[in-house]
Image (cartoon, one colour):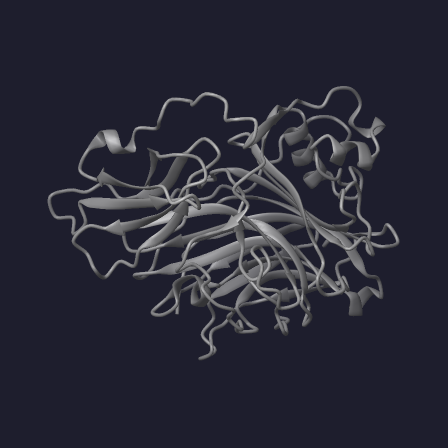
Length: 417
């Protein structure tokens, strides 16, 4: 996830946001392995050198989670090897038997994580509109979307705010090599999505947010990857603030992890040159709320000239979140706001890669400019550009469709590459 150079045009009460149904992915089932907090691991297919090792990280509870295919008599891969390490030098190996039903049994709910790794943010009480945005961010609820201009996103925000959520504090570190080993100049057509552009409205953007359900991923080669993210900035300049979910897999395993990244100049520090893992597990079917904004060091509210990128990502299904900030290196320009499905397999896989099949994703996405104006497909139908991804051979990889009546963005995978 780096800068992109061009695009190809082609309620005030608690309620539950619903999306069109997503077909369940056949084959992969959830696997959980109890290792230790802040461990970085590789998953290898035993006896299959074709499958590239896949990176995965333990959450703040010490649990590694991924999807794998149960093995039958004719299965080529019957076992996985999980090799883990951390920054202190601790290492350990784990065998994962894909022929055993117990491998796919979910672990019992763990005890509370150490206070150094996570805290419990209580459910919001009282009238949610009686709080200022600064108060809400300070207490861990993120920026409140406009309930009138963005009722669908506001409803999901309120759903998240109305339940206790664990806030991950640690593990904001890059995924281990070979994930994103070097800076990769991305194909300018590697995205499917929709974008609000400064050139359409004359406004600069300082806050963007979206909701989506994590799709079921199917790996399409020995290594494939895709990322779903909401972003602010980055239109042909390096000022992109983004958060979302990374999908990556090989022929036997698919993994999902929450990410943040601030593309602000060519700084090599972690979370700038590569996405950082946010310290909690996500999985297919989880309901996500993603917010990014330009702010100051406290991230209390959108502030175009505050000098920081701010990130808020919530998994409402699992009850985990992350709220964090990173300082600017290059001046934030706010020329765009976007929601994208990105083919970042070239960086994630480093050779012989493909675009992960994520099926179809339904997104509610809106943005706010520095004048306080809201931008949505319904209120601003001429102010966005639809983006359709294609590879260097001009084969279409993904598709984006916008419904201006419902503010719904549909992202569809078509093929790998």
